Structure formats: structure tokens, C-alpha cells
Amino acid sequence: MTKVHENQFTLIQGESDLGLYQWNTNTAKHYFCKQCGICPFHRKRVSPDFFGINVHCLDDVDLSDIPVIEVDGATMSTCRSD
Image 1 (cartoon, helix red, strand yellow):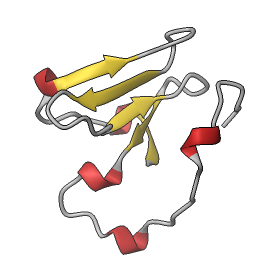
Image 2 (tube, rainbow, N blue to C red):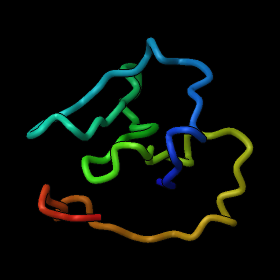
Image 3 (spheres, rainbow, N blue to C red):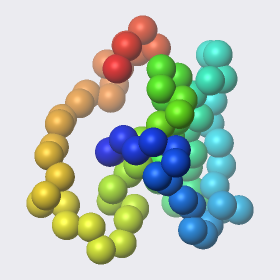
């Protein structure tokens, strides 16, 4: 995922293929593909004016130029502030 301000994000196609997953306060919005289940982007609770973009869903992106930060998704909780 990489973070971009909502003014820098445009969904070009596929909006009708997206589902929305929310829980707890329903502030965060996690979008997923109804066909394959991948999460192409989301809005976090702590920064709702930004999108987290799954760069693996973008065309023509050189992934070698993007720094990698490993996370353990199984241990993440709603208490995290990042």
C-alpha cells in the first residue's frame, strides 16, 4: 500500500465491481473486488482524507522503486494510531 491524498486519486473504472467492508465506528472504508476479493484501496479511520492504494493493482508501476515495509496483519488491532 502507498498513501495518497484523496485529491490525487481517481478511480478510472470498475466501481460497480467493488464491495465495501466496514466495522466498529464505520469510519474506515475497505474496498474489495467482488470478483476476486483483492483490496485495491482503503480509507483509514485516522486519516480519512487519504487513500491507501494497493500498488499491485496498478498498471505500469515499477515496484522496485517503492520501499517495502513489512507488517503482520494478523496482529494489527483497532488501537493502532498509524
